[in-house]
Image (cartoon, rainbow, N blue to C red):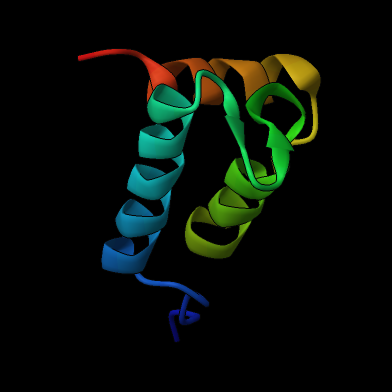
Length: 70
């Protein structure tokens, strides 16, 4: 039996999108602090994808991909 994820893809994408908008609008800061030190994205990955991003290099790679200007 497949285990249900705590957050679905729609919520995950909405939360990631919110982080990206705040990053771009506030130049790397939001109400929680500086984006480079924030744990929201690794937490969202854990909840949705089941991936535990622990290493600084893994986290940086994911954040760079998310925050990249399109």
